[in-house]
Amino acid sequence: MAIRITPEQEAALVDFYEHGDLAMLCEDLGVERDQLHAMAAQLGLASRKRLGDSGKRVRWTPAMDDLIRLLYPEGDLDDLLDRLQCSERALRLRARSIGVRRPRKATTWTDEHDDYLRAHYATENAAAIAKQWGVNPCVVYRRAEVLGLKKSPTFLSDLAKRSGLAERGKLHGFKKGSVPANKGKKMPGHVRELVKHTWFRKGHRTWNGLPIGSTRVNADGYLDRKVQATGYPPDDWEGVHRLVWREAHGEIPPDHVVAFKNGKRTTVEAEITLDRLELVSRTEMMRRNTVHNLPPEMKEVVQALGLLKRTINYKTRKEHEQEA
Image (cartoon, rainbow, N blue to C red; front, side, top):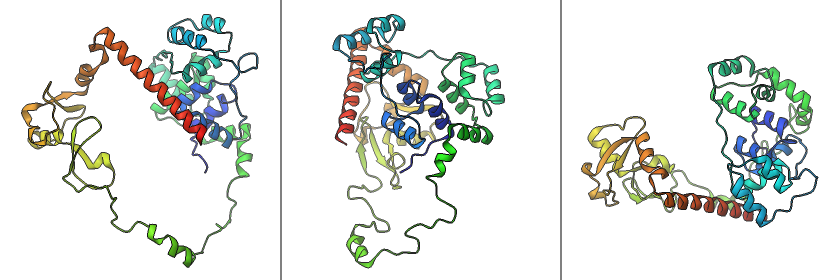
């Protein structure tokens, strides 16, 4: 099945897939590595392998990984590259694979930047704009998306011609007047008899569906009540504490949440009363729950736990990919 690729993703792939940093490209496009390669193959781009500067695959050792964990997040990249004797791209890929990230420098956008993008983004190459400002082209793509900017049809047409995508795409498109192979054909009777018992009937409910008014304890430990039956759980279930507050005070204001007072949280429906609840802003809620409120040793535990979870998730995903 063909993957839907937006014009912005296509432009980024054409510009950076064959010679750019694949790890960062995956992060900027919001896709996994396998999906990135599939998108590139769909566009007819050359395949990529992870290589060092010498053209040979880097053989990573535990000592090299320990050095990356120590120096990569905040250290001097040039010094680390000299010690490891590998390319920057190989280093970034390895750091990502073992769950180590380097904080990105925030780009400060001014009105002049935004005005320039509005005037030139539709018709100019994002890589050229990025080079002019000294930033990664993907930063330009993200800012353009925030501003609601799109490439012009003329630019996209010229891009397709330069890359040869227009001609390659014609080979795989439906021709005018083409007729689907099953047009006008009905399902054979013997097939219908074999499969009709598997069809969903009108008004079908899942075997584990609960009636409206049912309660449950969600994954975050709060008591929910089923308020409707659309089949979409986020809309069907709502926290009982929110319902209690809304019944007494009306709609919850934007950017605010209903929370239990300290030590008053419960999952017993009869005990969820107004005197246990309070309305707080999302800013205040974030301030209460931030890791910076914890003692230094607890901060380290939380951060180490996060790294451990990311590493486990990465290895689990790789095992599933290998099994597939």
